[in-house]
Amino acid sequence: MTKEERRLWYDFLKKLTPQFYRQKTIGDYIVDFYCPAARLVIELDGSQHYESVGEAKDILRDKYLQSVGLTVFRFSNYEIYKNFQGICNHILNYIESLK
Image (cartoon, rainbow, N blue to C red):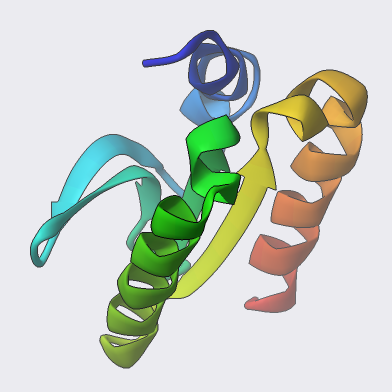
C-alpha cells in the first residue's frame, strides 16, 4: 500500500462499519478498497492516473465496476493530504444514505 492508502486504511476505513477490504480482486481488477455491504469501491490515484494512458485505463476499469453494480469513488493522493476529513465525511455520508 502507498502511504496515502495506509493513512486512509489505518486512520479510517479499518475501523468503519460496514467492513471494508483492501486490495480486493473484482473481475480482472484489484481495487484499493471495497465494501461489499455498500457495493462501494474506493480508489486512491497517484500522478500516473492523470496521464492519458492511466486515465484511459481508469475509464475502462470504472465502466466494468459500474456494470457489475458497484459505485466507484476516486480520490487523488493530494486530496488525502489536503482534505482527509472531507473524504472521510463523503464516504460516511454515502454509507449513511444507503440505510
